[in-house]
Amino acid sequence: MGSLSLIPKGVESTSRLFAQQLVLGEFTDSDGVPVSVALNVDSGENLCELDVWKVNFSPLLEWPDPADIRIVG
Image (tube, rainbow, N blue to C red; front, side, top):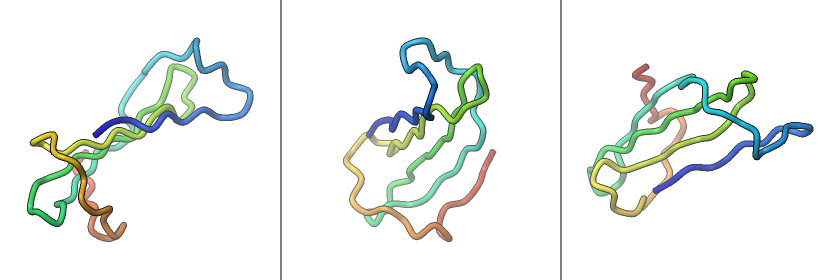
């Protein structure tokens, strides 16, 4: 699992600092293992990264239908 960096046009990627988690969600992978998803912003309030990880650190088997993602925070 890992992170997808989100770098808006005109933003220097090397000078960005994590500021806060915007939203936290979860879904269940096709093998029944829970997956957490977090969208984070940087100190300039720009989208920074999308973190996705299975709670047992195994590979993701299937991306969910967006309707299957539960917002938890």
